[in-house]
Image 1: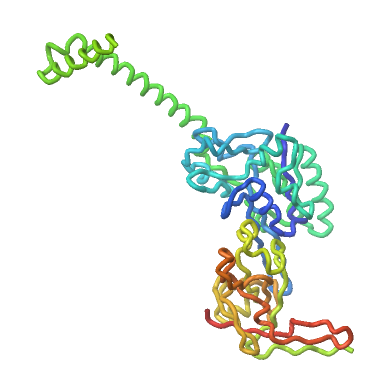
Image 2 (image 1 turned 180 degrees about the horizontal axis):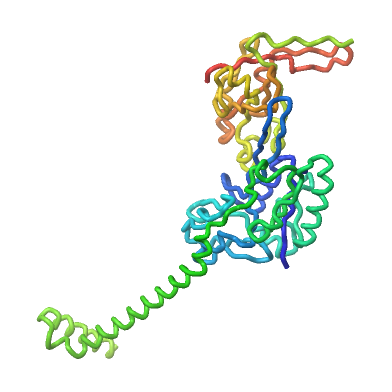
Length: 261
Length: 138
């Protein structure tokens, strides 16, 4: 079932409740957060337009982080981008590839929002959604969340003429439907996030070649071992020096010892 | 019977104070999960007024009130979201206790800068936003 978040930045009051709930619910410890609250403003007092930034994982469908991950630590499930930190080897490819600058390195492994996998798979709502006091966050089936987002945007257009839904089309559709009162660029969100083409090349081209190269290396090592063994058994005494002959004799003695015991 | 309040003297700003949504009074600044979302309070000051003083966003300044009481240093938040004759800070910071490992010495206390007050002649309520501060080098 394709799930999604609703993030309504026309309702967000910037209270940081989601940050704290996420931090404590997921036991992230100090100085690690999956959500960052900020603000932006333009104009001159008293004609100022200001708003809240709520920076977090947008759960791309064509996810650059999942594409570049060489170990499958990042994967997709329920329409969200999950993170299995145990499988992360700390290569930082996802940090480089993410168009939203989301994954962060903590203690040598990548960390980011995984949509509260344990909680949601057990039928609950993510921690941030549970705690939001202004109904700016919701979680549910993506079609229902999209419908709610469009309903809210159309209501908000009476007050904010440019109110719109962000996330319908970006990176193949986001798992985060964001209701924004102004244009994405004004809100500091890329209107058309660029996924580095190298990330697609990685999964479709470089990764299979890498697997093939490893298989070839293993096969080559096997063949080399067989050849070396034959050389040792059949040609070692004739061509070898006294030292190697001694070594062969010693190993033969060891073999005999093993057979006796 | 409204009486206009005093205006700030030259070079001084009216000291306003309020709350940060994550914190409760002066009690939660050392709480790990709350400290990390807002570790220290900031001095909101009109960006144009700050520029005239040669103070930039993120600078640290000391504050001194009309009676010479001072506190800080506090980080400057230069913004267009406040009028030119006032500065604002969230209440609860400026702790001085080594037991508060995270909050000790962070930010400034609005209470230490409030040495004057006015009483409502009818109900006796105290008005504390009658103190004025100036920015000093940290």
